[in-house]
Structure formats: C-alpha cells, structure tokens
Length: 123
Image: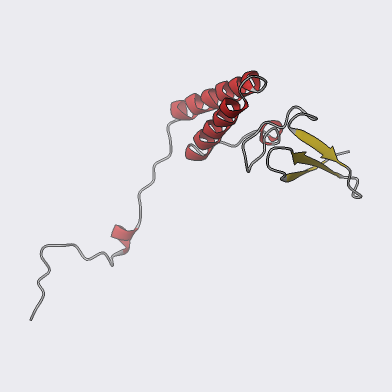
C-alpha cells in the first residue's frame, strides 16, 4: 500500500523550519515601559491596604517585561521577590535583612515565602 503525499510540504527544508521573527516597534516598547512604570507605582500604593492586589500588579509588570524583552533597572528588579512577587521595599513588614559573613553581599529574606535574595553591594 502506497501513501500519497496529499499535497503536504516536506518540512525537512531549512527554510520551512526557520521562524521569522520581527523586532517589536519602538512605540510598542515605549508603551510597555510606561505600563510597567504604572503597574509598579500602583503596586507600591496598594501594598498597605491590598497586598494581594499589589502582588498581582508586580506579576503583570513582569509579564509585560518578559513579553516585550524589556530589562528592569536594578533598583526595580531588586524591589520584589521573584518567587512570590511581593514587594520588598518595606524592610520589617515584608522582608528582613540578614547579616552575612561576606561583607560585599547584602541578603534580604522575604517574609511571605522565605526566599533569600542576595544582592551585591558596591563600595
């Protein structure tokens, strides 16, 4: 019994296997940056009254950043827990600083999930 090709293309060609990716337009990247800034601002405002809403805002900002490949500045990147999206701005309420024997590393422990974040300190 012979199988016919049924008019389907052979996908072994390298042209068919390569995906065409286009770069996002600059106006899209600018809108994404603005939205990330707005969401982080809202997350800071809502931290006291609605911590779950605040975490959701951080989660949405991270998703936008990943989708549009936008890097967060180091201060913003260090301001939240990567595992539970809780803001770590308020040392004492959401995080505690830990003392380490190594002097050039600062450790912050998230009080929501217990994850320890190590941040290099430049002198």
